Image (cartoon, rainbow, N blue to C red; front, side, top):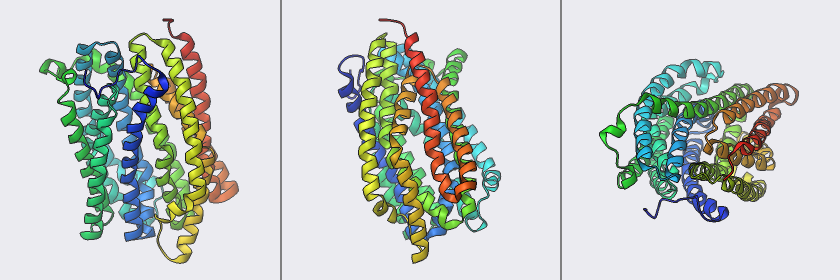
Length: 448
């Protein structure tokens, strides 16, 4: 077996999970570099209005990305199970079906995204002075949806086989491309916010090509024409797994868009500060996402191999690692967050001070409650790896309800400060659903 592929059905859970998650974490650092560089270049080179335009488009852009990631992560669940059970013919047929399905979905999502941009920005009450920038950014980003779909599918396929290093290297190459093109397009050519979006799409293309080159050299992924032939039963199973995860992310993003419409009531300076903190949110979450990817693969492979006891051991190990990591990241953000945030914001001294205060207060609330988010990612991913994508979807609905309810209620009582608590309330609501679902699910697992 290729050395980059990792069979997680034997060995101690802690080293396995860490060795799988650490390359993904490093990849997430470079992936966050996309967002951070875009935000810093836009915020510093183009000013507060452009930064606010980026923020106003943020959740709608995340919705599209979340739908893509939800489908591709769902498609990868049976791949991990087939690999863990050494059913390589079934693995190839599943990958072939996922390729066919992803191509069709990419076309549908591109058309739908472009059509929805004007009405969604209107519903979000996007201020007139930043509407044009938000619209342009989304047009370019959604035009690149097929590229984003290709990278996410290829990365999920490789991760399902235990290869976390290739997505890491792809993200390094893409991030360096994105930094260079951001500087060239925005500061060199003067293409503004559209240039930042174009740089991100091209960089995603680089990462997709890198993963494709790697996947094409793996014997276990050498597909035939028969593997790519559409089979309704297999396509239906993939949709049954991917659709709840896509819907879950869509619902979470819808709650974020409602939150954005509330944030937009408090003016451009508040939006800019809120946006700056949200860009650092990716840094807060990146280790949690990596542990989540590790748990999907770990749980899926062990379920396929019939080693159910190892699933319980792995979840306990992952929770310990995740909680320790969240405490370290929270401490760093509380101590140095204001310094980090200052790099995203420009404007008059008054604008700078108000936006920075807003950003740090929001960052502090999220940092204090960060362990809650890390529990969410570990438990949700374990359930998904076990083939249960419905209860994680229900947790997404709970996130939506809590985020919306708390934002609407507290913003009337506390003003803009109330919005800061909506995000952490959504994490807590999801944790309640996921923890109960996991405890119920592990009791139903067959004994070894």
